[in-house]
Amino acid sequence: MFAKKLIEEVLCAAMASGADFAEIYAEQTRTNSIRFVGGKIDKIYDNFLSGVGIRAFSGTRTIYASTADISREGLLECARSVSDAMGEGDAQISISLTPKRVLDIHPVRIYPSEAPMRRKTDILKEACFSAQNYGDAIVQVQGTLADVDHSIMVANSEGLLANDRHVRTRIAVNAVASDGTENQSGSCSPGRGMGLEMFELFNPSDIGTHAAKQAMVNLGAGYCKAGQMTVAIENGFGGVIFHEACGHSLEATQVGVGMSEMCGKLGQKIANEKITAIDDGTIPNAWGSVNIDDEGNPTQRNVLIENGILKNYMIDRLGSRRMGMPMTGNSRRQGYTFEPTSRMTNTFIDNGPDKNDDIISSIEYGLYAKEMGGGSVNPLTGAFNFAVREGYMIRNGKICEAVRGASLIGTGSQILKDIDMVGQNLATGQGMCGSSSGSIPTDVGQPLIRVKNITVGGR
Image 1: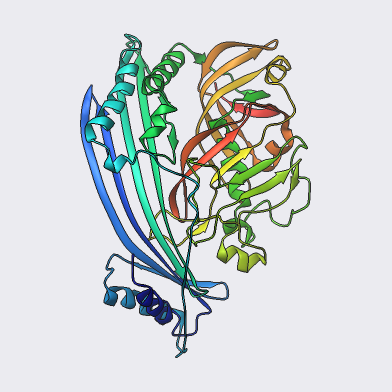
Image 2: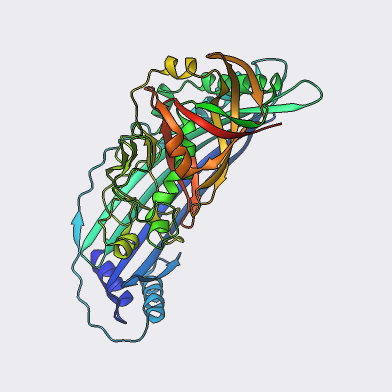
């Protein structure tokens, strides 16, 4: 994106007042989004973002500034503002950058930016009309097809100079069913770090049908009763509970400042021995994967919990300095206006020893959470509250009537101990995770699991 000599000059300017490390992050991102509402394509968005963020370190103190002015003078002005904020000084710095070859393990075959618009609108229409035509009770369908083409450059005062490009595609369909007196919704929103070849894996019609069927199930469901009970949580997006209730507590952003319930527990048993939890940014074409993180480090497969024992955290450069531990390739940010922090990539509970049929048959009375929705968590205490998007009662080891209005309430540290059965059908679900460094794509996942006792909110 920039001449090497200019990058070196800007880094030197950022360190002029005595910083011990400086970094430049540049991005060019094109986002395209198509929206379907009311039986037709409603809007098409095309957005291009370009800019640079510059950061300097002095120990564990950081100064960050960003600019959309990518001229030489604009970059130097931004660097000087960082240096001035860091303090006074007149350091003589010499930096020599060595371009780094980045191995692309997420190949793209059909770049959305190069595909005809008609091809993309046809995919979205197929999904949405499939939902719309599912049944007479479907009264509203909305859909979005979005693609992102994201190129970055990372350079730092240690000599790193790396460039990367990442493409993501996602479709989302939401359907509303009505019986004339009340409405219920259903949704489906798969995504991958791929181009339009993603729809060779996901049939658009099946996506729309899934959303409409879920809306119809919820329309005919009674309300879930509240109370303590055993719960089976299905695979895929069910992993959002581990992501939110436990994953954030394992990020150096919280651990490094003593604001996590997982502080100081390395090597300790924190979960049932059937639980092995992993964050892996190297899974080819996964939604949360990248070749390098936003500090230029290669991503890796990071075992967080192994057979119930806490093995590692997710650590960025600042967290590494605070904690005295190696970086793990987990530095991420929404864009150049955000300072990066430690974040998850593809985080999941791995397959376990139990058969899925045995998990359901072991529950005399409880809840089967087929699909989870959103929720909230406090990383300091681990307290969480998550909605169940589609749920069913379990009676005498059989999945029975559909219920709605259920939520799961607990703490991350407790649910890790109360998961006592782990199945063998690992799958992932896609989401956007928000934190101090913005909104980023992350995969969550797990096989079917059993929580022996948890508070279920309902009526």
